[in-house]
Image 1 (cartoon, rainbow, N blue to C red):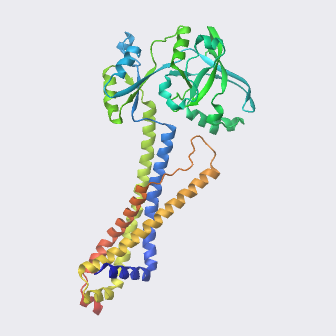
Image 2: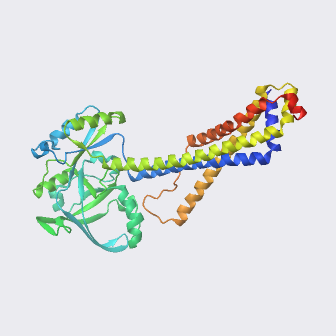
Image 3: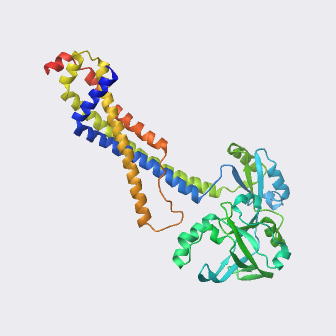
Length: 430
């Protein structure tokens, strides 16, 4: 049977059996729509997780072992020699040492804060990092002003984590009636600090002094627990107050490629050091949980699609019984078993494709509706995305293929039954 004739027959049959076709396509539409919807939801939520916990596939954080005989004897220290050894490992492109500020410090602010008067005091946590780690995120010079600069009132440059600004804007500021801020507004803002003083411990070190910090940028590389300062500044302040200024808190190793990370991790452990992958593990765990939920919901959508296939099978079996005479005529005028079977399979494929297309539209409409409800009904919480869904081309293609395959699976046995009908029996009504 020529394709043009087959297509005319299929179109005529679909129009004639429009009610049955719509019912069958509706099941496919629901199943495919749910499948695409849940896949897009899973991808969107994983994007949110990646924003909250940004991790690099090329980096590992090295720390000294917390408790070991070697560490008690003075070994496995993250000093300059250790940094040089780690930086020379095969596969390592760069090594960035970090040093915690080991003295207490507090920030006190009394005055106008972008048009709003505030009175605030906070315990400050800081980590010294090299400027090369931050790259283009630094908008102003990120250098140690030195003792002479501090004496002249030069502020210490500081970098804050981007996530802190998000938390401030979405949680802290609304509750206290404070203005929302942008990166450009805050860069250059200076606030006073007292080095050597602690609110929590209720003590002040000998030689405690007032200084100032200036925000010079925001970076995902900055510590989330506080601010990042120039490494030389932290080293100098630790030494001034008699704290350890020789060993580093951690060393960030950047691999030449993602494929080198596992090898670097193994070599680091052989040297007696450990990896701080707590944030990476947290991100991976949340990501896996999101993926698991998305897979479970997708299986539910697959079940709905399977039920649609069963419904198509039942409808086509009934259709075969009703069209026995038509099938007999087709066979009598020269249609082969394959022609009859192809007729029913193409009809089913058209139902599956149509259901898949409408399912795609349904999923998009449902996602748009939920995003609208989230924008208008949910409060503006930190890291709230513009959309909870991320539709990708492969999802749409998968949905359409699943819809067609489900319809063909449901039509396979009825199509074989139609092809096996005896023409004489079908024409005689027997």
